[in-house]
Image (cartoon, rainbow, N blue to C red; front, side, top):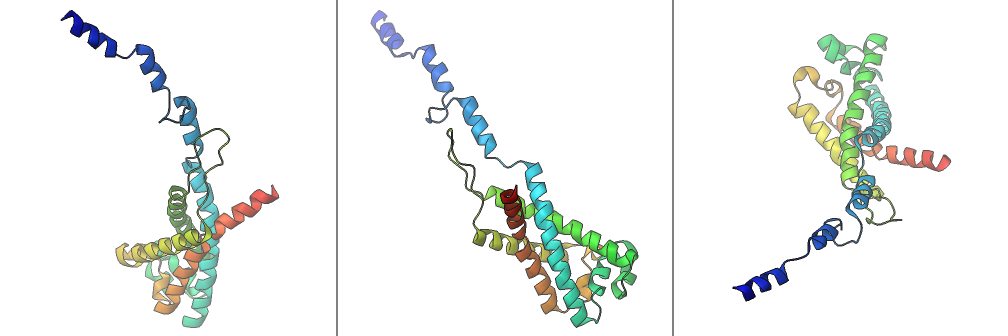
Length: 213
């Protein structure tokens, strides 16, 4: 029994071993607190995502509104009609058939369209943040790399496709975009394609602003 007890005591790790191993981070040799800080640096916070969404959403809103104006001119003889139709959220079906520009319909319609563009851009930027390639966790490591241009373009088109499906198939009648009732199916598809292609422009705008700064 005494010999067995000696053997057991001989194989019991020293408490200091546990203390030293607990402050190492997954075999990297970096203290846990420093590793946690490094990982935090590579995590895109919500404020950054929303800030980027405001830029990419604005790009998507402007480009898709331009396409709405083109489609309105071709399909119903009024560049303002599709944007006016968005204000049916507030004014009901009468706004769908309004062709003349006005603050009541055109400005309000654009404000709603812009807000929803930023809403969808937030999902886009969130997806791009999750898809970013993380940098290595050690001192002097480079920051997380943003997705490549093809990935951003495909992501924008995917979000536009989801937005189209939700807008036209899953949304209550009163909260649909409204412009789908003034445009042909082909022109409506072009509006959503323009929206999807414009979402990656936000990254380009921010990159150019960063270079000038």
